[in-house]
Image (cartoon, rainbow, N blue to C red; front, side):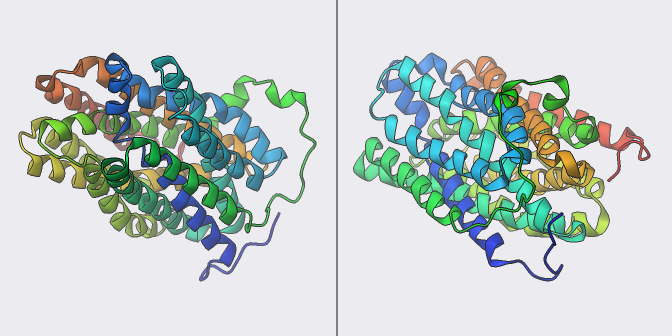
Length: 391
């Protein structure tokens, strides 16, 4: 096992990882607010639900492989794969200008988040002591949130001033810079194994690691709200007269950024479940706020509340999952957790798009479903047996 750094400090390698994460998340998130209109202009308005769901489907399907490769090939190569996929796909969006070509790219683009976050989480678990893990996940989550906050605003500004094709090329540039920074990070997996064709063979244990069931199940239920929000907020913003739709995502992710470090430290001190029992009810309130919004101000308030809730919930659940992972199969455990996350996001995007049906009068029922699932997640945490699921 690799030696861990002192509990009071983070190495330069950790900060390189954070900077690379900022660029990686900015790369693909700057596209999200503009993709619904881009797809509509291609003649695919009825396929908006596939923008997020296809992306997350591939991310989910790739997790068992990325988990295996993380434990065999190394953390760094798996992280690099994600940025390379972003670079290539972003560059190709202006080229494949048909509905079928667009949907194919969304499918392939999902490999990016199927690989990079798995390697990142395993790397952090290798190098950060368990008593600082929640805080470290908060830092890396903050880096991602900076990218998620800046990306949509940058993407919207570039698209409005220079055209959507330039936005895609800027996204590709950000992915390239992420790769350059990632090359400065040293590998932490010392005992690498030969990567053979058996890595393509997926068994039940590769898809699901029972030890992480509790945080994975809660993530499944709460990630549905993420898929719904990121699919519908561009249309919701347009309906409320918000011209730069990326600004809604900026409010959401900046509030997420503000809370992440506080929530991470709190989960280290008071326990993962204690934090979740506060953040999930807040997520429920945020979903109801979205559903009841009838003006831009209330929509922005909902985005801020959801950012605070999501920024507390996501890193806390990830820290909880890494706490429960078996050291030898850390990549597999983390991959299993992310499979549940992407399943929730994909279902949220697809089902909410179906309920919405391009009719703004359906926003309330769409977000009420999200609130109900948050309620189920909270009930699970309250009723769970502590001896079965450590926190």
